[in-house]
Amino acid sequence: MDPTVAHRRRWAILGVLVISLLVVVLDNTVLNVALRVISDPNEGLGASQSQLAWAINSYTLVFAGLLFTCGVLGDRFGRKRTLLIGLAIFGLGSLASAYAQSPDQLIWARVVMGLGGAAVMPQTLSIITNVFPSEERSRAIGIWAGAVGLALGIGPPVGGLLLEHFWWGSVFLINVPIVVLGMVLLVVLAPESRNETAGGLDPLGVLLSIVGLVLLVYGIITAGERSSLADLDVMGAILAGIVILVLFVIHEARSDHPALNVRLFRNPQLSVAIVAIMMMFFAMAGVMFFISFYWQSVREFTPLQAGLLVLPIAAAQIIVAPLSPTLVDKFGPKAVGTVGVLLMVGVLGSYSMLSLDTPVWLIELAFFLQGCGMAMVMTPATSSIMAAVPPEQAGAASAVQNTVRQVATAMGVAILGAVISTTYRSTMGPHLSDLPLSPEARHTAGESIEGTMGLVGRLGAEGQALIAPAKDAFLSGMHLAALCSMSIGLVCLVIVAIWLPRRVGRADGGAHGGREAAPSSIGQSEEDLDPRSSDRSPERIRAGSSE
Image 1: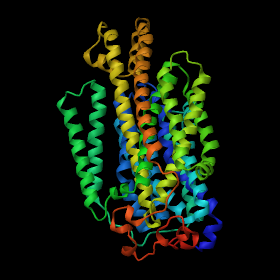
Image 2 (image 1 turned 90 degrees about the vertical axis):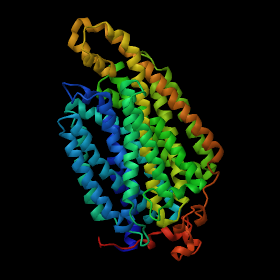
Image 3 (image 1 turned 135 degrees about the horizontal axis):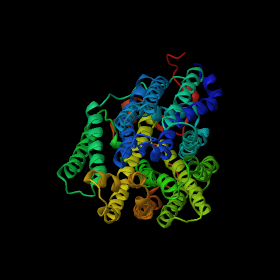
Image 4 (image 1 turned 90 degrees about the horizontal axis):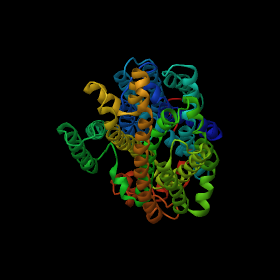
């Protein structure tokens, strides 16, 4: 494809990339509103609390474990080609998820979706950095970040609308036509690009990261399910996961072609932005996990109503995300990011005060401020990350960002979900102990509010006395999880306020600590390593096989 044609089409190309991004990010947010239905033994699959957590984390862990490798594959074999393959795999996984017949089948189908999503996500930002000239790149990245926020907001209402009229599998089936549309538009509009100096693959690093994360998450989720860390398999899994992840970091620091380039973290501009994104998504993942149950199980709204009530998050993203680059240019990333995190901390704290009769308009205001805060954090952080590396490492930096975001999401769901589960079980225990139930039935009923409500349905009038205690127990767990989220947000606030740069700096080969970033190793001048210079202009796009 002629570079001039690619330049003329750059905004249309951005639209296609946003479609590709939306379908990947939208998936988990659509799933959130369907969790209650999937846990229902009659309307869904009868999934337990731990199986629901795995339905989310099987996707995010594979996604996180393969992101960096897929970024390297895109840089080496072509970003457009890798993006098309990823969309195809994601679509097939969505189809399998829609028609899963058991929680285990759903979890494995989500693994396939995670593989596809990992191939899609890093290519979108890499193509943006190659298609857009430096003077327009911040605006394009702002729209990209807004698409992430938009997906977080519109996912629940879309899922609620589908559940109002169709079966639970429709929340996955909707991905298929979007994937097909995105693939057709990519073939027609997008240019091919690649990095001639792309690094090698690191299968050992990928294996270590996935095994370590799976063991750690398994231990955390199981600890919440059993309300105990004392069991040998639980503590063993957690310790083994930590040890393997430490070995992973050591291996990556020594590897010439790491699966996760930990040397990039030597650049403080990049590392502080990464930490800010990681902590925010950790805090938000648990919130989005429990808020769906709050609306549907505690307040007894329908899935559609619960989904529509999250729309203020999307509205805030649509309004604020496009303005964020202008705010960053005027006030700097530190000021904008600090205000964004401050908003998030206030909102997370407010969730610890939700009750059975909290006015809906107050919660809607909190959601709107939450969306504003996320938009004000994501854009300056993403801009700082992409400005901290030379263009040939765009895929690597994008993958690092998205890897830690997905890991943070998995950890947030696992840890904060375990907090809710542990609190719920201990609070409901006395109410269930006097009922004539088998140990297995008592365990299931005490695991989650949906488990208790399932028992209420079987007991009839006798079980009505359990409804109020179940709601109170869930609220207690939700309040504690919200306070944990707020604490994480406060730590993030300190980090951003002190260490996030006042202005986005230039990429410096020496800051990365790796020889691949040094000008002498790739035969480029210092100007070539500046991501704000014209090295990312459309004239630099290398025509690929799609021509």
